[in-house]
Length: 258
Image 1 (spheres, rainbow, N blue to C red):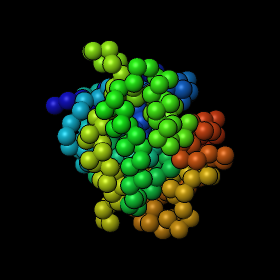
Image 2 (cartoon, rainbow, N blue to C red):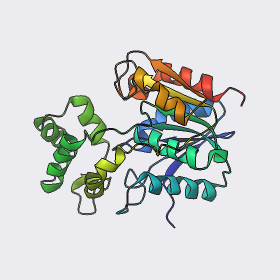
Image 3 (tube, rainbow, N blue to C red):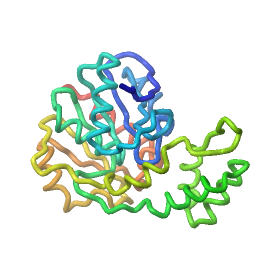
């Protein structure tokens, strides 16, 4: 049994943070430090096929939830508070619905329980082109990705996934072939009968269209105690675009007595 890689910091109540598709635990280090300073034992976790965690040909939410339970068992965590962004939010939702007694509070960042069409194709195609002709430097990699039509913000986000391989060439940390094959499954909706009775907060970016007002009935159907709040001046990467408001609103939820 393989255990997910993580960075653990602080002491106190456990708080697990799950990154999104093509992300990694490193993306959350600044906020992780802030949560640690507020008295949490913070777990910044790399999901399978991402960051420093293991690569595996199977990549579904069922797999990722099983990885979460294995990680918690390994760390001696019976129950935890959890934050999940995008794909990590879907993993957290699936986990909370499957074993609600193990999730004390659920915070979902800019993703809903509904299905989403795949929209990562052009990003993954650009990443595949780099795998075919490895760049000599990060600067060259960034230029090549921008030539493929990717916005500079996306490019900087992706460049964090580059690492030096044993032959000193630059390559991707993440398992690009499996992620490419599995991108349709990342948009999967929760099963209709899944529900979580515990305290739940959905945070959406004011400039994002991932969670719409029309989604509220479906959200409440799965999460009857859910509340939706908004992070101003932020899109889908709300925790990076407006970290201060994200921190304030998430702490207001995570520190309440449940």
